Length: 403
Image (cartoon, rainbow, N blue to C red; front, side):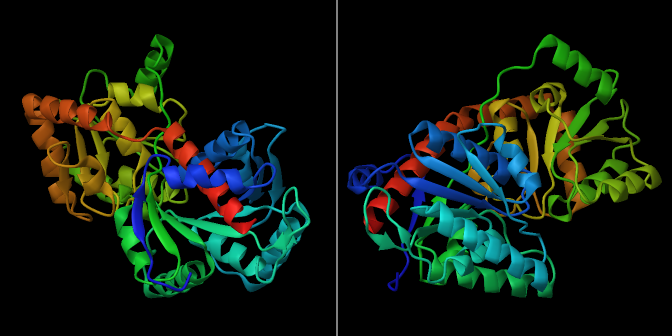
């Protein structure tokens, strides 16, 4: 597209997309491309793959084996390993692009949907000049390209430069750019190339934990009746967990002393454990967990100390659980929580974070009021089914336009 970009917020299936589906010949073929994603974006892509398949679309998922593991064992969803790494590496990147192009040429998708800027740029380059057979016809045309932007630029000048280059490639080559938060949409809108939409990535619905799950989580947390301050995040620099551990030092003299619990895994696991032991701070790192609802049930305060977030899944889950929240005022977090549902503090401010947490521990009425407000606000969140239906309609519209 060469005109000014249109930025819209897409939460429920738009009628124009759905009505355009009738122009597509045969089932729509969708190739989902992932980078080295192991968190919310990988789970979101796996849900899209299953939803598209259930809607009668043919689906292929391409990406690193670690990301493909989230797709599961559904034989109806094809997978193909393509090593798209987190950092530039000329030889391996060229090999990945060539492998991606070969698979797309043989599988003949109507739509390619890449998740993340690196995956989007790889797909855009791999699709250059690619013309494939249209489903159910003898026509040949290029596939449509959709790119979802999940993250903000990394820290450091070099990271910003690489990120900006990837943004430009995706904005110029994609037919549609979907952004996980309003600040990302504003960035992509600045390029005035592709159509840009905000596309909310919802947390999957979870039922209440069983008594056995609660008992097991209680044993692992080991708080013994003390307040529990909970964070659930990938152990990476973006998540600001080092700031949380520093804040925890400031409430060690309280009686009863809160226990700070961090659930998750990632590259900073060893460094964070060392920081907690040297602080000293009463912090327990549980590692990767599959029982987040049980951990939320035990939490007195949920903390999200990130340096940037789009639409954090754990924040959505905590709000649905009616938990009082302390979060940093970054990225899409203020827009997600709205007014009077959480205490927001600046990033990289351990003193401010500690003050907000202790304010909730000292004022049960405030904590209860915020929890009720968060639960009420979460009722308006789009569901995972909404997101899947929206994506299915988008793919059908783009496939029909290509036909």
